[in-house]
Image (cartoon, rainbow, N blue to C red; front, side, top):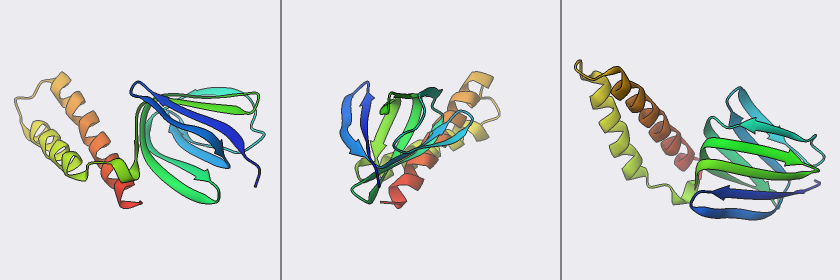
Length: 134
């Protein structure tokens, strides 16, 4: 399978810089699969699992927010948060899920608190799901 240069950069630093055969990420409008020779494009990222195929092996990560770009065959992924499956703290995700559910159940929670809790819950569920796919 042909490969392409892939760079994954977050606010925390460089997460990956090398060749890849495939990248699948969740954009705000659905999943986007990238192979060698993909047309140039830019897309905003949503919340979901990223799949990176390197040397025939798949690696998974929780990928949240940011953007992906393909320019002249080179792919740059700039997510707000990117956690490889084997680095996800599942216990922390479970605690975050429980806190979010408590806020959602609380009848006195403001609309802002509810929106933030719903986003927290979704991030926690994504992290847990990705960690199970190691």
